[in-house]
Image (cartoon, rainbow, N blue to C red):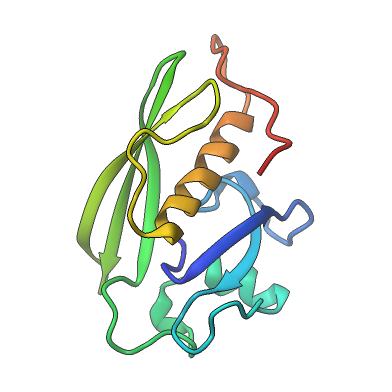
Length: 148
């Protein structure tokens, strides 16, 4: 699960994660904080790796006490040669607090129903990018992921 206040910007290929493909966004990412009063702050590498990418927001001193979410999870719900549907779950106090689907066209990775929260939208795009970069048996979906 990723912190709901994390705005990933680019893939972090040399992070210290043992299994980067198992990370909540499918890979390691650098980025910045969007918590009120900390907008645009780029956390140090250890914080990016241990809190922004992996932790509940409640463990971070930057996030507001009153918030709608502590973490966001993503998963591919369905895929075809033309479309991938990603489901997201928003968690608060270790319980579901919301969910939805974001549908992406495989050809150009455009979202057919963009989320109103740019952080959730960007995290879903990062998850999609990591998903498409993984080789899958019998699939033509894996594409060059050189554009983040």
